[in-house]
Length: 86
Image 1 (cartoon, rainbow, N blue to C red):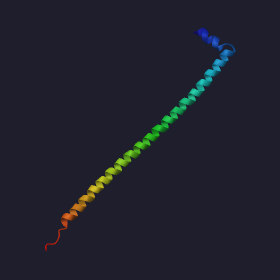
Image 2 (cartoon, rainbow, N blue to C red; image 1 turned 60 degrees about the vertical axis):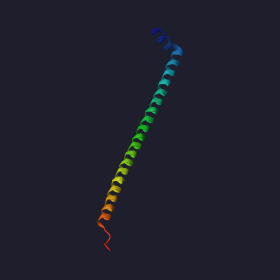
Image 3 (cartoon, rainbow, N blue to C red; image 1 turned 90 degrees about the horizontal axis):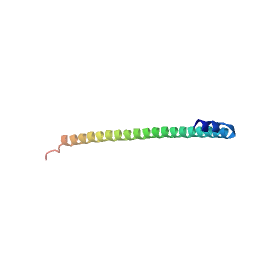
Image 4 (cartoon, rainbow, N blue to C red; image 1 turned 30 degrees about the horizontal axis):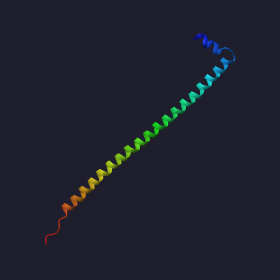
């Protein structure tokens, strides 16, 4: 194995191999960095979507509570207002 590495590093073929490996490593790092950025953006988007969903649920709960309160007030008003006896 050591002989193979040594022979690849010797001469013109060795230089070409080393340059090809460095180029591959550089492009691989660029690809990995791009994947990291995409994942971060996706995670941020997922967090925004989750937050929007939570806000919508909370808003629906508040509206539901308000409508129950309004119905109770309307019911109380109907009970209090009795038609005059004729």
